[in-house]
View 1 (tube, rainbow, N blue to C red):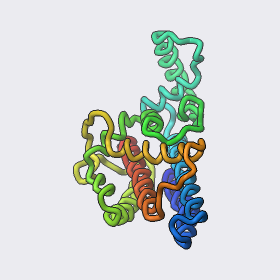
View 2: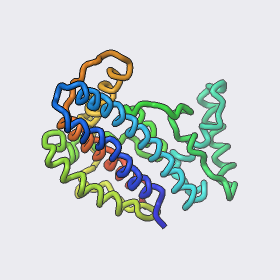
View 3: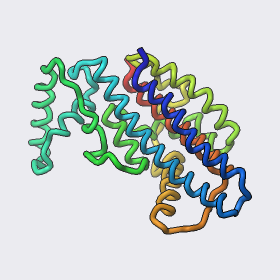
View 4: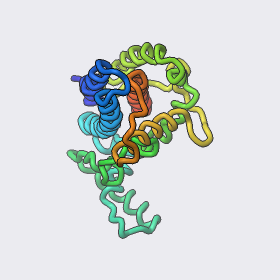
Amino acid sequence: MPTFLQELIATTDTRWKEVELLIEEADKHDAGSDMYDSLCRSTSILMISHMEGFIKGLVKSLVDDLNRHLSFSEFPVPAKEAVAASYYSAAMSDEKDFRKFQASLIQTLEGVSDFEANVDAFLFGGNSNKNPKPDMVSQALRKFGVRDVFKNLHGSSYEDVFESPRAAKRRLSLLHRIVSRACDAFPYSASLTKSSGLITSNYQGQTVWHEFLNNINSHRHQIVHGNTFENTTTVRDLRSTIINVRLFQLLVVYVVCAQLSP
């Protein structure tokens, strides 16, 4: 039986075709023409929409896999804490009271044999609509035990994708196969070893991955909120960006798979 996470990857591949169609259409027109500019601007917006949808889908797929294969008592500790926290009233703000409540509820839920976690407990403080900025991605993965996904991406062998679009395309194809194998059954089978190129590395300030996500989110923001009516990108840029976005998605999946692997 395929995992929900594996199904997400297959669905994501199909969904990106919508974005690629816009780029293909833009490429039929002269750069600088009204149609070219409109399609490029639209693509920049839709790309972020797909990114946001992917993070939501990732969270749901992980929760569904945990519910299908594990009892609540077997959940990772951060996932248990996220579920318990979702029942806590914001009016009860004392930290000591919160920890006591959380521990007590976790113990209670561990004794409920048919309890299933609700995906809402894992979605961004009850607000399911958030742009896929670095802090949003980190927040989502932290509830599954990934303390800082950017520590795994920083200094990784995948950072050369920002220098060479050709290398990025090759890496995307290879990584897709690796990640698909890692999540084709539960428990997942992945590890953050030197051979994976994703060993933990500390950083100061922002990584190139932070900058990448911030830049594409900022570009979308400028268009959506009417701060610019000019097209500042090209078909070539968009094709390169989409490959790197898809690489980022797969890298995130692999890191969380490794966290949840035995």
